[in-house]
Image 1 (cartoon, rainbow, N blue to C red):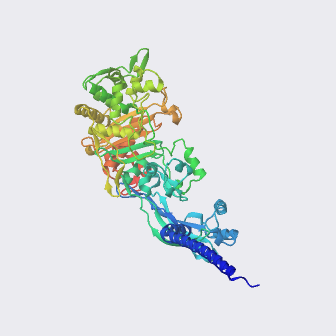
Image 2: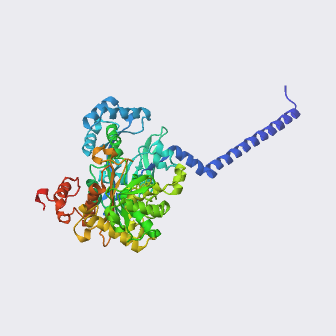
Length: 639
């Protein structure tokens, strides 16, 4: 049936309205979609581009070359050596067992090496390179390269690792590096991202640790393209990092080697200072060790041999060790008493062989006594009773103050591990430490470097350099950083009467050069090499014993300090030999030889020694493990 025209017209109008509404909605949606697309593609284009790049491009750190360390002559002390290693990528390898079997025919791989590599391979993603072996010889790497077609997934690489060419001579000074540990990271608040790199090396002890920030340098970066699985496809760009600073030490490697060789076989330490600048020319602790063992990963056997040695090769006795300074401390007591005006240089004190204090006798080393002695004679003959008397007059607080002025009881600012403060005791210190009052007997013990007094070999060398110059000499270990000379100087005058210092120096000269002086047997003959010194013997037990009758660890320490030449001081030397016995018999000859080598600039000739000791000196020099024996004739050919 045909619809009326009116109904048809109404239907047409309704359809038109619906179409318009639907069309308008579609146009509005398309407009919103277009606006959103414009916002994302134009306004937010950079942000989404970065997000896309992060999925495709990674930025990785490039370890910088570690700064080099040199001695004062420019000889390398710590350098970076090429390290040849083999890495393996599991996904590129067919049969692992077969690959390792072939590798073991080409390079020296132990069962332990293989097991370690397999454990690491199982822990890592199959596309991550794993180190199989490092520190390989070039011939081993060449063998692998030649057989590369038969070793898919195995790649030789070359990197840098730390090497110490002078090994034992600088072990305690420079220290060594090693891989970053969780302990190392735990000590840092905001660790450098570099430290997260596997097997990245940082300073562990010594100068390497103290100057880590300077030596490490800053990382470079490289942009690499990776696929969806994180596998590296190619390197896009690279920006090299900044190499660590090159540092020159004040130490002379030739003198350092001589000092180490002279101390061989002893548990000992010696320090040589340049008195005008405070430069440390040699600082040795014996026995030493090879720091390269720690860089490569020390074996259990080697480590036990170091830790179980009663001579403690890992300890740096030159700055960490503190000892009763014995009679070398009499220089401090003498200066304190004479500066306080409680005694004059010409005043004599009677020594009957002991000093009575209440019911107790404090004995002199010479049981029969020295008779009447003044300042000069007391130092020359090392009379204990003279210093007992001075201590009772001047008191411990003035002695303590003078000790600190001379560098004892002060932690000196040096980039070495565990630099000791030593101890210059006072009344307040004992009260605070033990809750007890100071006694006069404590002062008498302290006056001769026993009791509570403790000093390191470094502090004793500083003490002598300040006596020699009258200046507050500061020790310096760093000569230059990246060829920029580091400042030297003093903390000003010592503040001690030049007259008193002159009298002390003359008495020290007599110790070594006048008949009857405690070190006369260890003198040098040329006037330009004559030194002024002071012997010391410090007890390690409260009961006086004969050293030959007791075990080594119960014997006295032997000490000697000196400066040379007497008329124009250039160097100060301190020597401490643990459980060596008497300072005059044991430590003084060592110091004499060190002075001779330091002033001569090479192995000294025999004619500078007294005729009676030349044969023994020649034999000793011939047997010493010296690096450089230039001009060293056989013993049989020497005068």
